[in-house]
Length: 218
Image 1 (cartoon, rainbow, N blue to C red):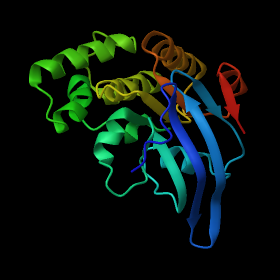
Image 2 (cartoon, one colour):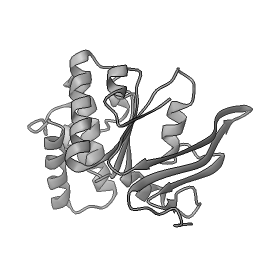
Image 3 (cartoon, rainbow, N blue to C red):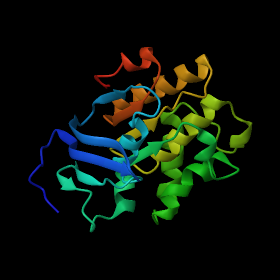
């Protein structure tokens, strides 16, 4: 592992990233840096590699070539603890139903911290705090399947927040939502960025979401 890319203000650095599936080159020579607290929007046509890039950032997809540094540490190194990494770089998917695992909201949010062996009293605190942060306080004992799409997506974000991440990557988090749900989720994302200084990287097809970011990758 290397720490020669360390910089207090840079949370992620990508160097020469390449990803190949079979004979198909999906990503090639991707180089970028993301500063702590930035909001990055990624846009482009379907099939251009946006999701593959995002999934590479927490090693859901293992790069074919290149390096990704998180706080100066090369996370593509085989000795990196991937589970620890995913605590710090949380991912929210397009369909919240794919991310909700329990039949009660508070149990769903507690799932991640429980798997980390967090103390039960701390888990209780994190569940309540996370729900407040996404504007869903009072929904602790609700059933996720009975919530609206926007509410489900905010619960999915709360589940990531309970892991205490430094960065959240979101793969088209509003694509399946109506306009009200879209606004609720994006308001939540930007509030988390401003109030908690959480770095946000999201894929979107909506230009109003893209222009609200600090940077846009095409």
